Image (tube, rainbow, N blue to C red; front, top):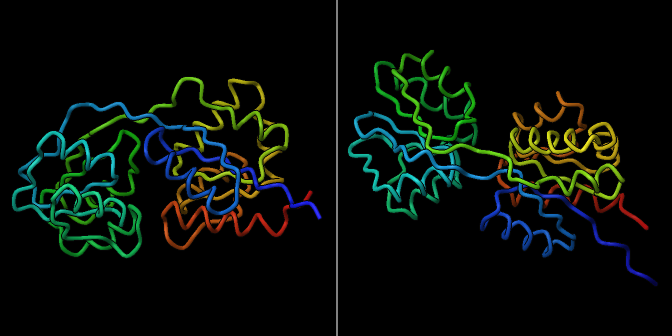
Length: 250
């Protein structure tokens, strides 16, 4: 008896160790990865302020850029938006004082709302950070300053996976941010196949790493099948493959 074909799963993480780790994970789950990086990092050469009462980092990339620049948080309360950012801070030698229960901008606002009134809060992140974080902290009475550590752009040539989606040849897609959704659909639009891509993904299992990513995808016309309880890539990949496998056949 022939084995069923392996699931073909598109993944859009940046073209560094994250895409390599994603490919390795998907292969270990018995899937055929389609790596199609939708994000490239352009550093701004700015660093987080060193005179804040609270400093918030929202990504591993931001931590690495700050650490490489020799950033010193001093006596500030260091906050990470989630476990991956917290792990990166610890690896770089920083203490981590706050990690919210819900790994999101809203979760961090909820965690800090009762203690930041009158405090200087530095938010250091990409140019595509959610206004939920800055506006929520301002509403809580904080003096918020934002430093853009890097810009996220779509790499030249990205979009191979859109052609597969348009042909109905993708079994699943893993969206890890609103920007990956936007860049994926922009690549489809440039190729003149956006409608076919949306139709093709209706037949696939679409995963979004959290509610903001799901909202962006659904607003753009995509049907989202899986949103894991924990917003990390491994949980997303495992949940999507598990969801897709029972319906996948020759």
